Every structure is written in C-alpha cells, then in structure tokens.
View 1: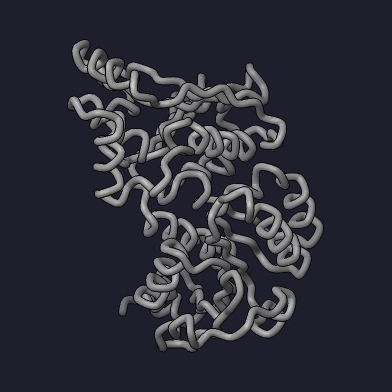
View 2: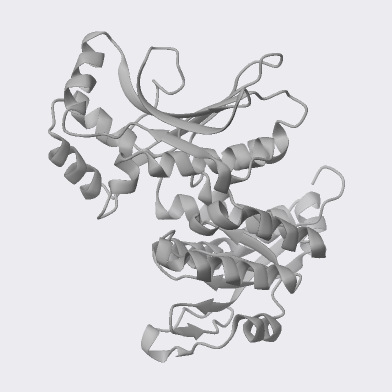
Length: 343
C-alpha cells in the first residue's frame, strides 16, 4: 500500500445506505459494493454499506460480509422514516422502476429522506419529471443533495457535465443519443432486419426490455434530455414540451437509405436555450465524424454545444443494469466522500 492509500484508509468514513428497489439494478448495486467496497474506501476515503433493502412489501437488513438473505427471509416493510432512523443512513438510493404507478411513491420517499437530512441518489426517472421543484426545495432546505446520474444515461456521466463541469462554458445546445436500445435497433434495421427481428435481437443481447415501447417512441430519450436541460439551464422538466418521431416498421427503409449514402440513422434528442422548454426527438442521418454516427450498438453519447469553448462530447457508457448501478455507486461516493485538496 503506497503513502496515498495509507492516508486515505486512515481517513475512511462510513456511508450507510438504504436501498429502495431490488431488481436487476439494485442487485448489481449491492453486489458491486460487496465486491469493491474496500477498493472504493482506499481510493475515495468513503465506504458505502447497504444497511437496509426495501421492496414493495418487505425489507431486509444486510449484515456486513454476509450475502443478502432470500426474499422468504425478509421482514415486513416498515416506514421509511423508521428505517432511516434505525440505520442512521447518510444516503437513500432509489432503484425502483420508472413507471407511472410508482411515481408518487418515489417522490414521497425521496422528499421524506431529504427532509430527514439524507442525501438522495436515484436511477428512477418518473418522479424527477413531475416533482423536480418539490425535490429541489426539500434538498436546499436542509443542505443535502440529490444526484441523478443513473437517470440520465446509465454509466455515461452526462449528468455531471450538465450539472457542474460546463458551468461558465456557455452551453447552448444538447444533442444526444441517450438510449442504447433504439440505437441498437436502428443498426440492425440498417443490416436488413425487420423491426420485430431487430427488437428480438436487442432483447436477446440484454439491451432491450420486454416492452421497448418507451425506447422506440422516443419517450426515454426525451426524458433524459429533459433532465439534462434541467441540470444545465434550470428548466422545470414538468413544463418541457416534447415532439418525437418514433421508430416504426417504415423506419427500416430510412435506415437502409442512410447506409446507401454512407450515413447512419440515429434517433437524436435535442434541446436549445434558444427554444426554451422544448425537446425534439428526430430520426436523423448522421455523417462520419459526427460523434453520434460513431456509436456502436447500445453505446450512448451526448454533445453539448458550447459556441466559444467548442463542442464537449461524452460517449460510451453502455446501457445495462450494471451501468446504472455503477452510476448509483458514483453518486453515492460523490455525496459522501471527503472534499479537500484534489479530492
């Protein structure tokens, strides 16, 4: 262990976590912390530990170093307030599905955690769209933080760029392919697949969900750009109007036509400060040299247009449960790690 590692391990602080949601993303989050916790502590001076896991009707209390017990051994669900008090949690992590049915629950629990002085880290999108102002006010009132990297592009750190890294850079436009499913489907259409075959292949590869309608309609891409615009320009996502061009059966002809012109068809979500509160998702032929043209399969990319500084592009970060879980890990460290010197 070198001198830097010794210094970090000597100053390690605990970051006890309550996790809501134990689907693929939640499980990947717990597994990663179990495997990499010591390494995270050495590198970042903080050791995140999951002290409680909450599902729809039950919860469990993991013990350090022991595997999560089977669902049959979980306890009845108690209030979030009591759970946060019993664990003395510093972070409340949300990994529940972004469904309309769970929107109110996600919003209520996030606000409750914030009002108890607990940071919120979320990969859940639904409540961010309709309760942005309420969440922001609750966080500011008690000096705690909300981080949403997992909701803006899985492992792609586009949210960090929008929130802080582009401050003062004069960002005026956002142009993005933040949905790996639709990019993968469009590439399969360009190879001659039918839409149904392209979807099945994306599902076989674990890229597309069982119901990819939100991806193919442009809804998911629009949601992510709404959130990025909220971070970059202070827009309230609830007020943003969306115009979207979906991927349908006829899109196969457009994808093949683009290939014949040495281009690639992409579902591009865009926003501009010059057109406030509007996000458009359009099928666009991209040319070589365009960062969105270069995407491979489920990769994502966002181009932030900064006229004076030049475009800033972030790409990669494949869409997957592990990618979203790593975003949750990153945000958990970010809200709890020491902030001194270069750290």
